[in-house]
Length: 375
Ligand SMILES: NC(=O)c1ccc[n+]([C@@H]2O[C@H](COP(=O)([O-])OP(=O)(O)OC[C@H]3O[C@@H](n4cnc5c(N)ncnc54)[C@H](OP(=O)(O)O)[C@@H]3O)[C@@H](O)[C@H]2O)c1
Image (tube, rainbow, N blue to C red; front, side, top):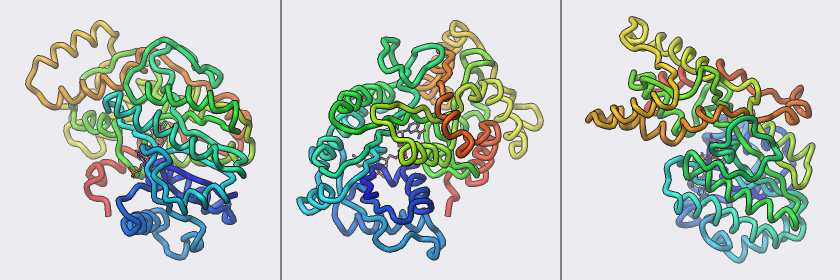
């Protein structure tokens, strides 16, 4: 396999790289990395390799991973003519994971990376004569505000979106589905990723910001019901499941859901787990000064939100800003159907139990000062 991989420096890409190095030692990976110059590209790659494989003896052999300078926001990915020719001459497999995952990026910005970027990637990929298969990394949250059970076959809806990020990913999926007529392509929709199986966090995202505000006692209420689901998973799980499906069960035109499905965390379990673990290290939780947030209906939350906006408390405003980009999913009472993936590879690759994962991630966040004390 000669794999062209985008997004290797991201939370998902790093885990894909680790899995490939461990499980497919004969594969060669051309990893697209953005950098202002070849010198910076090599410096970024060296830093990344040291982070991925801290033990030099465990590093993949020289030449298994080849950094390639490029930027998905540019037509032709900004590849040099030499790199473009080399990729076209060699690549057999493609995984496109690079994206802008900021939930509150303005829509034009999100579209530039996620829709235009995806178009640029596959404009280049369609020139690869040896291409055998390609995968596009998407999100379960292309479901937007569509309520209820969301199937792998569900592709189009008019329910609207909770944030511009998921709208841009929905539009990118539409683009990718159009390309399936001419390219062997499958789509992998991932759950919300909060860390590695052991709790380590490679890249902090909006969920960690919300967890931190919760830990610091600033979250008073969530909208929804105690049964509302939060499909949280680990980067190890999605990387391992994605590559198991991509390499062992590839089906062009297919969409796969990688998450917990019916086993997704209940909102009440999220609150209880956060409360229990917070009490281990934060005195005010242990002494009952901080109280677990309530779960309230939409109208009550709207009133509460309005009241909090009238205060001058920047923390409350931060909670509202984050909530505005996330809580719509709690109100939509969604379940992302994962039955076919669990039936096909569930014995081989299992998602970590979400309560255990949340507990370990929160402990890690607290122990590392929310990323500040990382070595
Ligand atoms: N994290 C989640 O919870 C989650 C959930 C569901 C789906 N996903 C999907 O999984 C994929 C990977 O997400 P992630 O969590 O790994 O994101 P991430 O940690 O933010 O990493 C994003 C990656 O994309 C790269 N990238 C962004 N813009 C680029 C550009 N213009 N040119 C080249 N590379 C660019 C970044 O490179 P730099 O290092 O240069 O910034 C980085 O490698 C995305 O498609 C995302 O939609 C993620």
